[in-house]
Image (cartoon, rainbow over all chains, first blue to last red):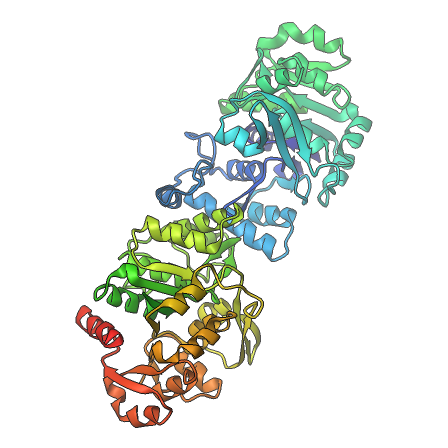
Length: 304
Length: 304
């Protein structure tokens, strides 16, 4: 059993790559819910959906998010009505949110709904929201308090963040199976997701960080930063703004109490000694999953 | 100023017909909200939407509900996911519900959202939900308690009703402008809507029935029953099940304390004396609004 702490796109690609190298039923993704949102009354779980769609082969590669073959009838009409349409929801994607919301209203937990959707899409990988409770990553910024999606989507993370909060995390309960999976997994992988806004909201759930600290020798992270830049999203910028080094060394340092090994990109091989000085082993490979061969190589390096 | 107590399709057609005969800005529709529902987390107001779409010329005549040129991407996908799809929501229609739900979450009242949607669609008629509070018409039936849409849409009203409740009505507050409109209108029209489930939930809002009783001589109803049958929906059946005569006489009797005049169909002219014996004046015309000429004739008869 392998546990994978997961954000969105980077984690989805790593899970897909790992699925090609090991029995996918051995993979247990523990997924961030800190950027889940309620919009138009609908419960939307971007990271869970990105992973589900990607593992189902339904991801939209042109957009980099959402479903392939998507249409926009509802959003076009909503925009025409003068409604809030900055958070784009495709017609097929909306069906997922309607399904989830109605099931939650009928008393199902987010875990149960996640499993139902995964089953519908024929996934073999097990998906767990890290908690069934509401956790919201929010930002204090130069222009005031912002919700996750206000910062991320509406403002394209183009504003200085002064602090990050994980609202509700400390009072939350891990979803069924999460702590057991982390205790029993032979390997715990931290996906190349944003440390501050994809992985930290998982670590903040009571019990999670403790288990990782206790099992540090079984935890391996993949750096989402290559040559000081994030492949996607504001990980580099946020690391800097929060006082960390925006590099694979900064990532290693961020995880030093919970990670024994980190996978860094070939382009960063010259930073190896700095990381080893932190007491963290280093593996070097290509970490950019832009084709199947690279992805497979990364997956094998993680599992080595 | 003319006030029109309104349900869905029949009221929408009467309002459209009246708009052709008088200045539509003089028309104030006070609309039932007892069959409003929350589904998939969305706030759906079938009667308000039917009237809005019809007056905007966007109604789907083939279906008899919803929008013309509608598509079903979201519903098709939701059905494929195994979601609850018995309450059909078209893609364009969904935009209305997303818009309304988000505005309500942002603190707008149903009245305000109704006005915004009416304005967007260029309506001249004024639309008021009878209350901004939640009122739910529900049924005790041979198979147990049913919500309005469980009875109406999911079971196609094919079950015996033993009692009808208007939950929340007695504790509700009339929406801004409703009582003032009823007090000031030169004429109050009760549309040819279902007396028990379209009009009664309006009458149950505190203050409404009192004003109509006090202004009985200014109130005219159009019978939704012709020769013992409803043109659409279960009005005849429900009247019988609730112990009323399923006829224009039964309708007149139902409204006798609040209505001085009733318009009945030509086919029911032989019931005139029975209604007059109740102390209610009778006007006879065609009440089936299946073309513009008939609709216009009915509108003129109402206003005569």
